[in-house]
Length: 336
Image (cartoon, rainbow, N blue to C red; front, side):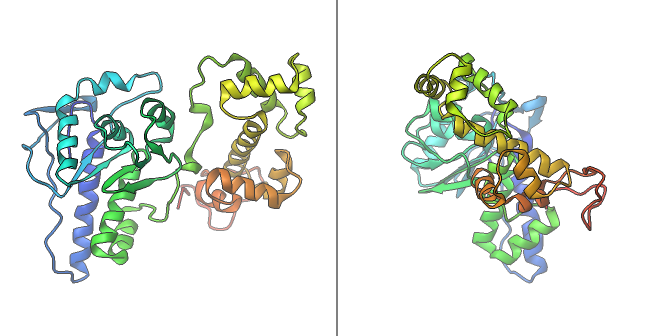
């Protein structure tokens, strides 16, 4: 684990802790092998992680896998300011990759790998919240923002925070088999069947800068989620031609108004699936789709799960509209 100033301490220790659990699971199953050997390394003598936590670190030494954790980053922050102070770490990442070491990033640790040139021409992922930032700064990266874990020619990147467990379980699966990985996941209460971060994306958290026209159109579409989409009427409302509306909206938002409307409808449907007992057909009609089958297919394309699957995974504890809970719901029910 490569520690550096400002990194998340939990991402430094999360992977080793899960590997330690896998060691115990494997031993209990009769496996005879050496345990996973994990060290926290740094080119610096002292490292203070995010939140002011001092980390004990060891000097650099040969390793098989180098894992780079993420750092504190908000949508208003410039990652360049963080990267500018991590010259020694960037050199380590480049040197280890050049020596044939498998390099892994967690969350926005992908910025370090990209800055070191490791992601040029490779498929990669990162937190959905910062995927656009990574793509804009490093245009040679083949970004796959919907994926949880991506490995391309010895370089692995993961989505945000808890995706470190998806990576760790994949590592356990490769070395100890699916049985040990499955039992480790069960003991740790970690979902070992995830494949996409799409269900977790909240478009309301994505920044919109310099897009006054498209934001106004989006607000109007948000008010008309259940109504039939009428491009000509929408353009008249904003005093432009349909062609001009498409051009201006596309230039600012990077998509068509109809594509945004589908996204907004799915966002509303997600909320209703999480917080009410309404049927999928009723929710589909509420957000403008008369055909529940077509709605289900669209919902799955956007979230990676069908509506019923999504409700099972993300239903909020205590939700409902007075029509009764589903069988088996408890006061602390959460994601499977």
